[in-house]
Length: 630
Image (cartoon, rainbow, N blue to C red; front, side, top):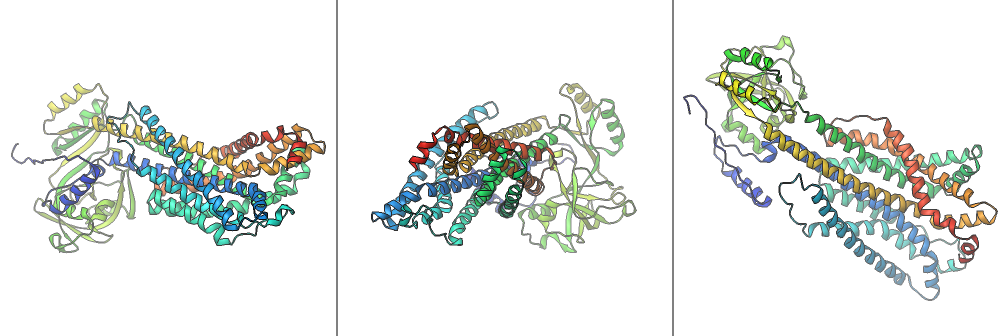
């Protein structure tokens, strides 16, 4: 070490997560003045940003999966009730009580729940093994084997969904009158509103909170989902009514399909809500996934600065920058760097203040690098206050980062006093900035306007991009400017890109699994009216309609349902995607008009194909056997 040098020592700790958390808590209480404690999120914000965003996306995907499962359970339970009305009524004619029929249905429900948990857990385990094999080239270490927590979570999810969405219809089924055996038009009395919707809403809200544990995402998702479901129901009712008024202006097949929508108006609205929610959450997931991956690619361009240069002497600054420009290096902005210590806040000595945020203790105990600059960087965003204008250069103003502001509990207008090599500088907080640390540009917690610190001793810093084969240029730079400290960030950038690649692979894989869940929802919604279509098809064919005419009518009906649902879903996905991108994931939102095209045409085609696959067996049955068999 030479006279005037600063020596720092670092000690790294690694271990089990629980042990690291408890050890960090102990170190926070016992560390001495001037010591800093950093975890991976603070030491490498670039990596942590990628992990946090991927985690939020996976939480969103989990929410989508829960919602899709809820829709599928609700539609399936509805069909189950319709199919078992006659059998329950028949049991009551031979003396079965309501308690007996209800307990019989509950036993079946429990068997289904246990089977679903076992099958789902097995599929999840196999999916994890498949994902690990796909990521084998990206992972340096093996992931720990799955424990019993996911199994318990899966069981709890199944029970909550079944209790919320299947139990109310089963309670209604147990109230079917025995006279239905003679009068098929006798339906069970309608349930109380709170009994019909209360358990379902409670189950969804509970599972959403259990999965995400994020107040903002939870509130935004539940409120948005509720509002969109109501809008879907109202818009679906209006569109079904409008479609009924124009059915006389279309061909035979479309006339039959639209007539079905109008005749079963309540059921059509239910299906529009189910299809619309299912398509909307899938489109939303696709939009957010695309924005997330695009933002990751944009944040890690090929020419991202991979070398940092600090301690550039002021008298060598021009020559150093000229050297970088001569070598063709892509250089970022250059900023002065001065050491300072915060001594007072609003006239009170820093030693006498108590900080709620643990970061405040660290900020108050150590020296800080400060700078001055005229223009606000592109990777900085003012969140409160305002940036200075040219007429304010030289005034006692300061801009601080949001982390620094939160740690010290500062606000606009507070006065901060700094000791800079024995010179006291007092300045007023003029603005608070949010810094994009993963830009790999020089950035500081504390920034002053030009004209206030220009005469103080300090050095300069900058960053630049060098191609992989420019090692000799770096060696020449070190020999020519020996006082400049050079930091090679290639290893860090490789690690960041590796983490982003892993996160992107996880995002893509979860997205594919969620798409399959969406297909299950579509099939469940289609199956809900399968029995009625079987009788309708038999009646139409008995009256002379050909199989092709009936088939085209069914396709027209489901196409109309899909078009209406897709249009509404695309609108909801666009609005929700903007909110999630800006407020939750904090990525750039790109408006894509093709989303409406995909929602409209994709929804129509997907629902039409799902409807055809689910009801094609209806057309194969002879009309006589259908009518005779009941």
